[in-house]
Image (cartoon, rainbow, N blue to C red):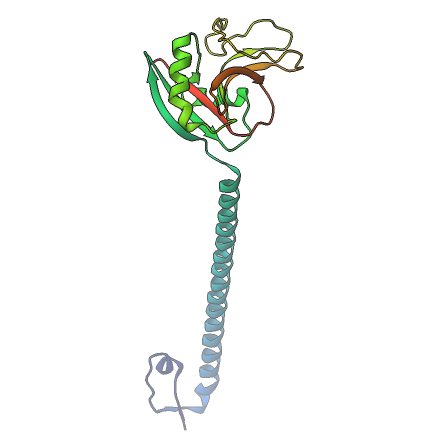
Length: 217
């Protein structure tokens, strides 16, 4: 007879001295071998699970990194137009926006529509004077404020983009860009002296661009 610690007793954290007949040694060895094989399979499965979790965590970290980088890129590229001032003239409300991007009259009209507004339509001297006074302190010298009124290439008349009515108010000193091979749009342009109504190319890169949206609600 010999002394042997059984596998069950090892797993149970206990040891005991037993007498093992010589005829049972082969059976005990087979059981032990089988138990070790089962434990090895379970360990391998556990190890594979850990590796799979590690791969998942790595993938998630990479996605977060890409997302963060993407957000930073978007935040650098997408520059929100800034509301400079809000005021009312008569029954109409106006919102003046400044943009640091190159803006043209088409994009300005689109931005106003997206805000449920439209490019401001200056129809008389009173509107012109009141609007000029209201925006004066918010527009830098040389700044261009895009408003409603467009004349397509080959046409003679200016037409408001929103109401589709003819522009009938043209103040003294109005400058019509004759000979320009492009559609023309109305704009208020500030100088060191005053703010004048003029026409500018509807499309083109300009600095210090603003646009004036209007609502009659």
